[in-house]
Length: 67
Image (tube, rainbow, N blue to C red; front, side):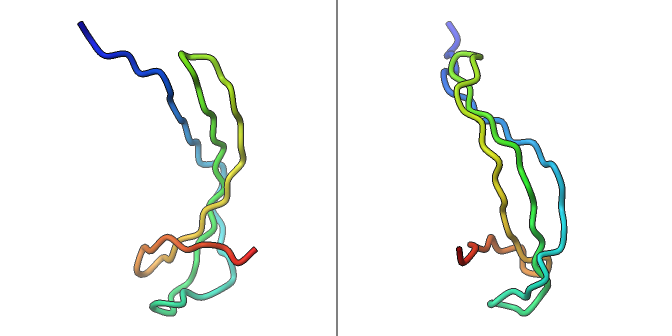
């Protein structure tokens, strides 16, 4: 018997762009990435969100927006 995956999150990268700021840790440029995220329950879509994630190009740290 195989285990069935009940919940599944699928992220699709929409676009990348420079955020116009610098990393507080190393001073490198920050990249903003827009994702289209879908949550599935037994192959049925139950949630859809657009997400924006920030990361440093030099040190690859994940950064949090100050909103």
